[in-house]
Amino acid sequence: MNYELPSLPPRVEPRQEWRVIALSLLVAFLLKQIPWQGWALLLRPDFVLIVLLFWAQRRQGGVSFGLAFALGLLADVQDGVVLGQYALAYCTGVFLVQHFRRRLVMFTLWRQAMQIFPLLLLIEVVALVTGWLSMRTPHGGWVIVSALTGTLLWWAVARAGKMPAARME
Amino acid sequence: MFMRALGPAARLALWSMLAVALIVLDARFGALGWLRAGVIAAFYPAQLAVRAPFDFAGEVSGFLVRHRALQTENDALRARNQQAGAQLAQLDALRAENEELRRLIVLRHMTGFDSVAAEILSTPRDPFSARIMLDKGSNAGIRPGQPVVDGMGLVGQVTRAYAFGSEATLVTDRSQAVPVLIQRTGQRVLVFGGGSGMEVRYLPTHTDIQPGDILVTSGIDRVYPAGLVVARVTRVLRPTDSPYARVSCLPMAGVDKSRILMVLITQEAPAQPGTKAQP
Image (cartoon, rainbow over all chains, first blue to last red):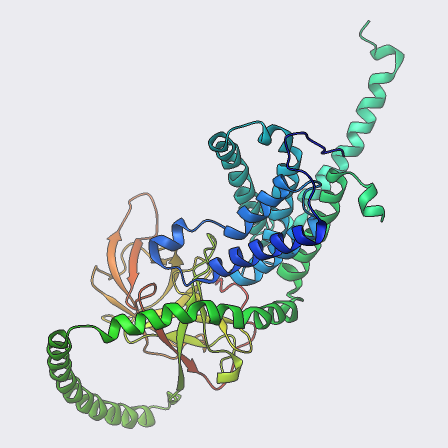
C-alpha cells in the first residue's frame, strides 16, 4: 500500500530512525516496570502500546507486525495472561492505526488523541475477548467452525443469486 | 520477501493465526512454560534496575521518620509482643494437649511447614484474575500449588514458579475455591473468590451461619493445611426464591495490602494446581 504523504516529515536515515524507535520503546518498557500500586496502577496507560502506535502512525511504512507481536508477547508474559492475548491486540492496533493514518494526520493533536480513544478501547476489547475465550472456550472452540460453514453457505447463496430465475430485473 | 508483497490485512491475518495458535498451545495444552520462564528471566534484571530507585527512596523516607513516632510504635509493639508471648505460651499448651488428643483418636498429624518470605514484585492488571508476582521462585524452594499467607491468614496459592520469581493467584480470584469450615459450628463449606470479596456457595438456606463467623481452611483438599484463617462472613442473605443462602465474606488476610508474604513450603506438591480449582 502506498503511504507517501506530503504532510509527513521527510525520510530520515533508517539506522538512525531505528535507534530512536528502539530507545523510545525501551523507555516505555522501563516506565511499565515501575512498581505501580493502587490508583496509579489502575490509571497507568500502556506506555509500550502508545509508543508503538505512535511509530505506526508516524513512520513512513509503519512498523512491522512482527515487532507488535513480540512486544505483545512480552506484555503477555509480564502480566501472566495467556500467551498471544496482547500480541493479537497489539497487531490489531498497529493495523488499525496504519489503516487510518491518512485520516489521523489531518487532525490537530487534540483531535488526533480523540481519534485514538476508540482505537485503544477496541484494542482493550480485543484483549478482553481473547482472554475470556481462552479461559472459558464455548463448546471446545467450535464457534469458529460455524464461520467456516457459513462461508460455504455464502458461496452457495451467492451462486443461487446468479441463477437466471433469481435475477431481480 | 513475500511478506512485503502481501497487503496489511493479509499480514494481520497471518500474525493473528500465529497468535491464536499460541493461545491454543498455552491455554489448552500449557506447552509454553519454557517460553514464559525464559522471557521472565531475560527481563528480570531490567525490572530490578527500575525498582531499585523506588526501593531506595522508600528506605530513605523510612529512615527520616521522626524519632518520637518510632518510639511510640516501639512501645506499642513491645506491649503487643508481651501479649502475644503470653498467648503463644497458652497456644503451646493447647497444641500439646491437641497433639495428645490427636494421638488418642487416630488422626493424621498436622505437619509443620517451612516458609519463605517473599516480597510482592508487581500486580498485573488483568481483569480476569487477581494475581501477584513474588520475588522468590524455585531458587527458594517455591513450587506451584503452595499456599501463600500473611500474618492474618490465607492470601492465595502459587500458580507458576519461575527461577527467580513466582506468580500467585489470590483467594479472591474468581477461579479459586477453598474448602473451609465455619469455626463456630465446624460445618464444612466451600468459599469462592468473587473479584474483590469472597462468597460461600451451595449452602442451604437454613444453615447456621451469621455475620462475623470466621472461616478457616479444613485441609481436606491437601492443598491448604488445616487451620489457616481465610475469611470473615460480612453478610448473609436468605432469599425465599432460592434453596441456597447468599453469603458474602471478606478475606482476613490483607490480600491487596501486605507487601511481604510467606509461602508455605509444603512437602508434596498436589497434582496440577494451576488448573482451575472448580469443584
